[in-house]
Length: 198
Image 1 (cartoon, helix red, strand yellow):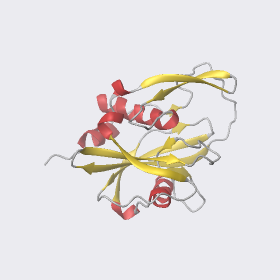
Image 2: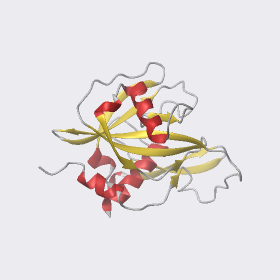
Image 3: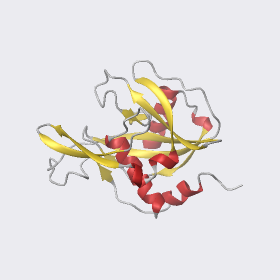
């Protein structure tokens, strides 16, 4: 049987540039000497009978950073983390109940800079077995799946805009059902989609 993640693994072998929340806003002037905090997010891929699924979360509405938004499990690198991969795996266990032993890290995508001054490393991982989603109280309102085929199809993406800190900011969106996937999460997925088309 062919590996359902073969296209993903091939995409990981291709080169692409780092991305940022400012990619669609070329007039943005970023401050010199800005300090970016390293972070890791887990792009967890689970094979189901109906295809490969990506696990996402809806963040709690009272969080300081990106409240109520759709996000990958993940967070900043803590002092006890070896690197961004370790941070992503630790956070996924805390936020959605994913045992690191149930994952196989396939690789990473180029870093993504967020408007909240994080430098995020997307960690692509195969999830071997289905597991019970356990949303971390206070941080995660919901854990859900979206088809990988949907969020890696460039035709499903659109560019929207809204006013942010006094200027119009443009960003990618890739909606799925009731979920409005936008911002950093959509930009990371768009980068993955572009790699998979090559």
